[in-house]
Image 1 (tube, rainbow, N blue to C red):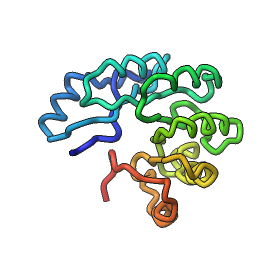
Image 2 (image 1 turned 135 degrees about the horizontal axis):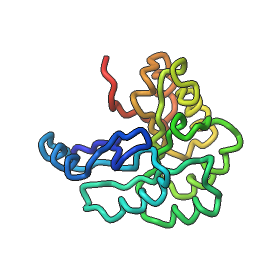
Image 3 (image 1 turned 120 degrees about the horizontal axis):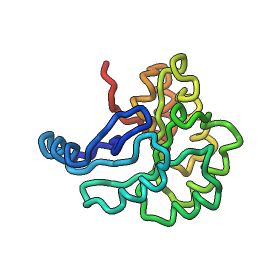
Image 4 (image 1 turned 135 degrees about the vertical axis):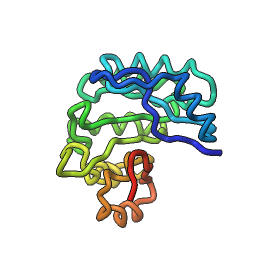
Length: 177
């Protein structure tokens, strides 16, 4: 079985679009059995995430939310839905994952045992998306599975450290050697 672990759907604030019918055709064309899906950066990512729960079983719905805009109660309520993972994007949501102000989010997510896919990027280009920030959280929450998007932002120096953390994985979208 082949699973695409990183698939945005809908339309983002910058106008980028991904149509579900087109995604489904590309999946069939390329032999992809399932895709983890979540909304682009949009005005109401929780509502759009909930809409993804209605899709057929070739799509695996992930919850996306803005850590700056969600309350503990709102997150708790959103997590009552049968999401299979969470997508966080530090640059788009303008937050530092290792900021202690967001610890409560990871405490809440830990209880649900969902993998967390986090956008990572070269630390110079996007300081908020520095993979070291995710590794800091991964050490603090060893019982949460973290997936660093875009092959840890291409930061090859961090791969050995990633390999030493059993709760950290990478996915390789938009990355090549």
